[in-house]
Image (cartoon, rainbow, N blue to C red; front, side):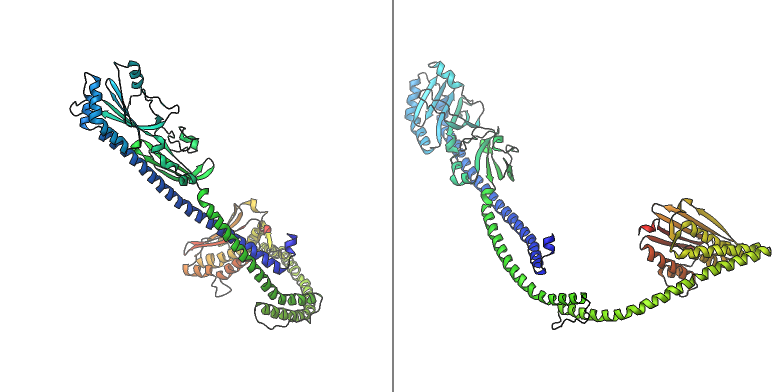
Length: 592
């Protein structure tokens, strides 16, 4: 900070320029990155969603092929053949070979996606794998029949990924083949009852071959999840046949469309799930956001470099311009140093009337004014000395007043005139409190004593035509208040309230504390104030110096000058009823 404070003004301007520039550049960079990144991610989400919808369409197309193949195979003639009871199995094989084998062969050749076809009948299992036909009868091969019947479909429709059923006659591969299978009942029209089931198997890698597209794989992970939340496509070996939670997606709901952006294993990713109700599965894609906004980051870096380069060029221009402008200020600083060395005959030449020219002109006026002020100083000091002497002389007047009142009091006692004694004592007390050694603040007790002394004199003057009631909280006596703010109000109550009434009246004086304020209240039952007159008093429109409005205005000005905004004066009056004037002031004026 010390180094920065002592930099030249040019460098301070340049530093401030760069400091101020960093904020909008940074915010602009963040804004551009967020906007472009969000736009790129949203566009990527839509594209990936469309890709998965196309993949779903491809899967459904293959699913339809399998189901249509099942319908074609199970025409009424073939279903009747399957349901027919032959006395000799040789006749069954002959009928199949001559009547149906070409038909089945044609269907299987046209649908290369089919891996195998099985028919489960009441007493025989028929296997058709491409063009090979096998039939296992319970009477002839009970053991093989028993093993084969364990794999009979328990429910119909699509079955999720499982090992392909073994061919009981042929030698099977040592590596199990993963397949999806479709099964349904065989009900010939002529029999009107279920004679067996057909099961068609399709290899998993054939059904989901489009998941191995290298473009999709580069963007993220795409896999198939069945109704049991199991991953049933083997295009991602580490996830195959595992629960979907292992992929980091913990909010997967089967049969529900999901298209959102969330964290998967700590990486912000696009997560899409599209149900494939036809096979009871969903296609799920997880695409890390970083694969789509890397180009945005590179573009942002280029933008920042351009802005930085432009800022440096502008900074150099700013520095040179500032230096040129400050050269005139340096002349002004040099002249000020000469003035500081008590050389008052310095002037700065003014050739251009811009802000710096006005500053130089003001400097010249200032030096001229200093000349005049120096000449005035000596005269002012002489006047101050004269004022001090007059102030000392004025101190004699109060003492002379006290002595005179004491003499009057002595004469009253001598002539046995108690009223004269009472008036002179009250007046002496009143003036002593008013003067209060020239202090602006006095104790609340002294302010109230001043009012009491004033009213004692007025009771004699008005021949006891009014009563006074004091309701005072003595706990506020030690607090200070602005001097002589109550006596003018009490005097107004007498002169403008009680006296015009022409009958006996009452004045109530209250003083109490509320929170941090001291409150005074003067209440009279005099003639009151008209609403029009009250508005003029409150607005400060005073026509003469001998009315109640003048006294209120004077008090308001004094309160405002001393307390600022920490005071309040309120007037309530009803003609024929009386007037209430309330003053609230801060209880600790010494804190100002």
